[in-house]
Image (cartoon, rainbow, N blue to C red; front, side):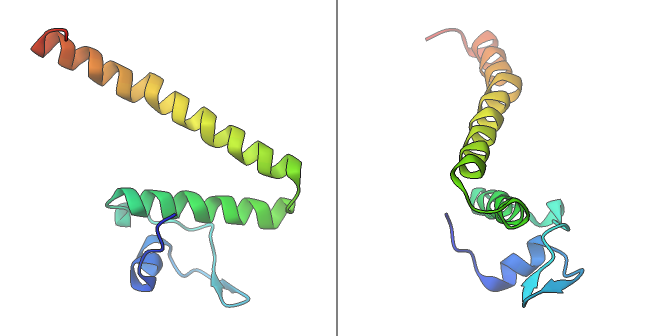
Length: 94
């Protein structure tokens, strides 16, 4: 998990409200996500908000890990694999 600069954090979420001194995680500004570390941070704050709402227990941790694994697989299936197929058509197979 990248612990990005606090100024960068505040540019990723809009300060629409504060709860116990922390930002309202319901407002993520996609335009401010510019690198892999920012993506990881945004995902982490979504998970943190989910866990706050649903509680820390094994089932919820397992559900989050499953959702992350599913999102990774869907990203590969819908984005990476078609890109690789296109590049193979352009450049030829290995």
